Image: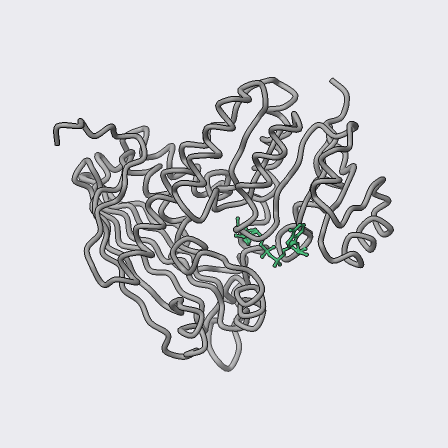
Length: 350
Ligand code: NAI
């Protein structure tokens, strides 16, 4: 097959990294077009990297008949509508997480994906493509820790990224801490525990950065989740982690425990000096998940070339949105929330 020709929408913090990977690191694909509402951003990437087309309007980009696929890295509130438009334009689609900010729009996307089964659709839960996270999955499947019973996750952004986050959050509605940040952990929990969430209780507040409260969001939050198969999840998410980007996951099983990223090390170097033995911590998502961002898009391109679908499905997107939304609702109302199951048909007699 000839090279897969891809257009990307969104050239911000993450979009630029995806664009760079498409342009330079993935064989068998070509970054044919870039799109951003910021004209200078699109033109700069076009010029620097020799991209054939640059657009400021997404609708114009997807009309380009040379394109095979789009990668959506625009703000979260645009994902659903842009996915549907791309599928209707007969394009393969990779969309960043979250699939949607509301269950209804996520379900509408699922319908569109199901209508275009000949098109590859993938949602950017990149941790599933991280070597450590996929190794842990294999260990669980091989029974190394017996039956998983509890997952504990920390997803903490570094304090030094707070200014970037405030700009991001003021300009775009991200869905809040649980749908934007914890969603990765919520998806991993479903994946590792092999079950869907049943009930959620979430709390949170803004302690070091009260301005986050003004956005009706939490700077630091926690959620306690009970799953259908009686397993449990504890999720801590935050934007104010002094030591760096701390992504840690623990899966406790009946015969053992797995821990990923207990110390969020930047690399293998330890500096010994008058302060002691120092291990620097990871700086942010681009550094920690560099390999995963590349591997997930490699998989997307391979799926197109090999005419198959990726393991991560649109249903994963829908169910994670349902769970993230339930956390948000619980945080906002202070109530214990039953997770709305999008696939359960309630008999009319009940
Ligand atoms: P950002 O705010 O840095 O960049 C957004 C980009 O989209 C900018 O280039 C902006 O000009 C462009 N844009 C905005 N509205 C547009 C429109 N209507 N049409 C075309 N372009 C438009 O945002 P960031 O941090 O790059 O996030 C983008 C998406 O990626 C979000 O959905 C976010 O949740 C997701 N994300 C995922 C991460 C992961 O670990 N998988 C990490 C960071 C972000």
